[in-house]
Image (cartoon, rainbow, N blue to C red; front, top):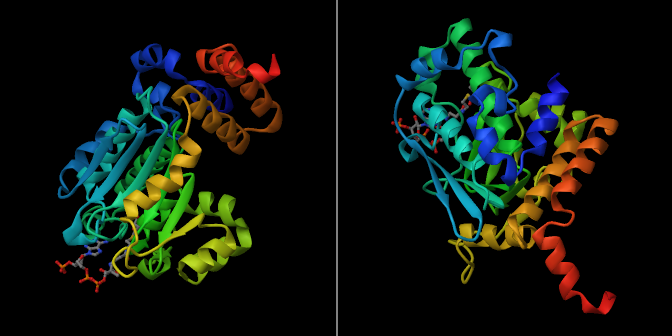
Length: 311
Ligand SMILES: CC[C@@H](C(=O)O)C(=O)SCCNC(=O)CCNC(=O)[C@H](O)C(C)(C)COP(=O)(O)OP(=O)(O)OC[C@H]1O[C@@H](n2cnc3c(N)ncnc32)[C@H](O)[C@@H]1OP(=O)(O)O
C-alpha cells in the first residue's frame, strides 16, 4: 500500500496536478505519517503555531528555479514552530507548480540553519509533543525531497542539527568555502529525527554516517566532497575578489540540469526518485508510466521535427 502511494506520488505530473490537488492533503502528499499512524497534523500545527518568529520565504522565478529561504537571522535561522508550518505550506505550493524545474534552499544572512529553535524545543520537550514534531518534520522534508524539482541545498556558514538534516532533503548539496555541515545532535543528547539519519546513510553509506553522527564531525567542503555528501564547492564571494554572489553561482550550477522543458525535467526527477525509493520491479513499472507522459508529448515531437539529420 505504501509503495502504491509512493508510485502515485512519483507519477504526479502537470496533467494530473489539478485532479491531484482536489484530493485531501494527506492522501495526495506522499507523507510518511497519516491518521493510520495515529498522527493528527492539525493538533501539532496548533502547538507549533505558538512558537513564532522567522519565516520560510518562497520565490518562484520565471526561469523555473525557485528559491526557498530559511529566514530567522537573530537565531542563526533556527526553525521556530511557525517556520515548521511555513515550510509545509511552501512545499505544498511547490507541489502545485507545473512550470517548476529546480529549487535552491538557502539560509538568510550568510548562514544556513542551526536546527530547531532551542526555545521551542525546550517548551515541547515532553515525549508526546516531541514525537508529533518529529513526524510533522519528517512528512514535510520527505515531501520536499520528493518534489518533481531538482533541488540543491546552498550551504553558507553553518548547517547544524536539523539544519544538517535539511540539507539531506535536497537532491544536491553545494558548500561555500569555509562553511560547515555538522550533525551535532549528540551534543544535545539527541539523534536526528527529521529523517536526516536515514537519508545520510543513503548518501554516504552506513560507515561514514556512523562516523559523522557518532563523532558530531564538522564536515568542511573537502571532507563533504570526499565522502559523497557534497556535490560542489562555491567560491566565498566575500573572500574571493570577483566571485559571483553565492545564489548566482548556485543557479548557474543548477541550470545545467534544469535546461529544457519543465515536463521533461520533472520526468527526469521522477524516474530517479522511483529508482531511488522503490524496489526494482516497482521502479521499472513506474519508469514505464513516466516514460508514457513524455513519449509523443510536445517536447518530444518538437525534438523529432527539428533533428532533420536523423530523418
Ligand atoms: C530536534 C532537535 C534537533 C533537530 O532538529 O534534529 C536540533 O536541531 S537540536 C539544535 C541543534 N542546533 C544547535 O545545537 C545549535 C545551537 N547553537 C549554537 O551552538 C550556537 O548558537 C551557534 C549556532 C554555533 C552559533 O554560535 P555563535 O556564532 O557563537 O553565535 P551565538 O551562539 O551568539 O548565536 C547567535 C544567536 O543565535 C541564537 N541561536 C543559535 N542557534 C539557535 C538555536 N538552534 N535555537 C535558538 N537560538 C539559537 C543564539 O542563542 C544567539 O542568540 P542571542 O543569545 O539572543 O544573541
